[in-house]
Amino acid sequence: MGNRQIIAGVDSSTQSVKVVLRDAQTGELVRQGRAPHPEGTEVNPLLWITALESAIKDAGGLEDVSAISIAGQQHAMVALDADGEVIRPALLWNDVRSAKAAEDLNREEGGNEQISRKVGSVLVASFTASKLRWMADHEPANAARVASIALPHDWLSWQLQGGKDFSKLFTDRSDASGTGYFDPTTSHYREDIVRLALRQDLELTLPRIVAPNEFGGTTTSGIPIAAGAGDNAGAALGVQAQPGDVVVSLGTSGTAFAVSETPTHDASGAVAGFADATGRFLPLVCTLNAARIMDAATQILGKTHDEIGALALSAQAGAHGLTLLPYFEGERTPNRPEATGVFAGMNLNNSNPADIARAMIEGMLAGLADAVDALVALGVNVNRILLIGGAAKNPAIPTIASALFGREVLVPPAGEYVADGAAKQAAWALLGEMPTWDLGNVTHHQSAPTPHVMEKYRTLRDNTSGW
Picture 1 (cartoon, rainbow, N blue to C red):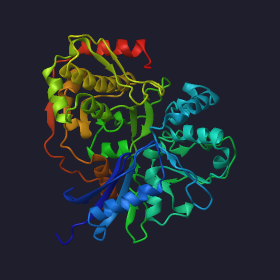
Picture 2 (cartoon, rainbow, N blue to C red):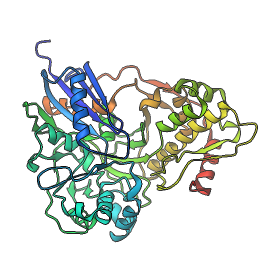
Picture 3 (spheres, helix red, strand yellow):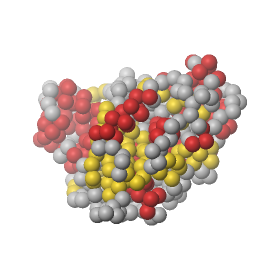
Picture 4 (tube, one colour):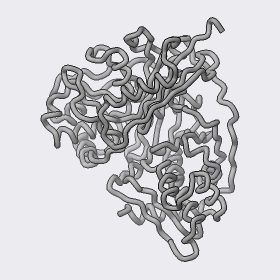
């Protein structure tokens, strides 16, 4: 035990920050901590570092830690001036005010086919480039002050080094690939797109790209800081996903992403062509509405999450014709930022708690079944589906997911897989090789397929944009 090396992994997510301290070799959890983040779609980044300090304290400090790595929510725009100060509150991934800006940039870059070839993805409101254009159009004085642009994970890694010095600002391929101005195929920034987004030719210092298995800097107390990652790439590392695995994550947003040996370019905009945290690629589909649909169900029905699940399982598949289009916060895939949720097919027979619960869970998961189908349509190999995220532990979710996906679903034990992935990065850089950790008891769920439910959902999806 005297030679045990402890590493720290951080998940700075939309709603909170989690810190896990693990044994670098075995992955054994030593201790952990967490702290909340403020609500809203724009946040002062200084609140993230305050929360991280609280979570580290909650985890017992870093005095015995040999390395640290930070994973974080993707896309959020942290605009910095020449002094390294934050210019305005960060616009988060789920802030949809930049929807028109995304459309404008796609058109100015030659259309969806051209932009997807340049950066792997068609731009939507979530992407950092879209937020830069929004700032240029609505806050030109702020845009003129931009000297650097960071994302949450690289800004926090920079703050741990003391900030101020742009030469110490670093990131990784996975998070950079969500900016909309980085080409994951060549691993280089497209600074021409940054200039186009800001509508001016500024002298900018963008975070340097650190290799997945390298350290990018050290904390002010001397702890090496590994490359870090975007949250989905961190989760893929945390569950030890391999090529052929699709990970469906049910967090604030819903994502379906696959580890791929080859890059993807989807001109339809459904699949984002991101990079992963190992040197491979991470084609990804994101929906804005996932676990919060479960939250809404608890408010509508006055039940707990587990009670919602039990009600849903007591109802027939298809909820006696009740179908939900779950665009409660607009939607990213399909790209309908102004949409709202729609219940369809409601009648006296299905106006009961069980059918409403079933329809809400089916609606939430049907969008992710579409996501898996979109990956398959791009040629992504799907051997296994791994279901993770807070909502995955609800007993109804894996059962209904398997029925909608038409495939077996595997559920690892509940855990902080984004933070675990960051911890694994720190261990990889520290040990010189990627460790393999025991995930614990992975449960398998196989349900009879329910294609009629997906058919009704897709009819509703295609016949209305939400209102």
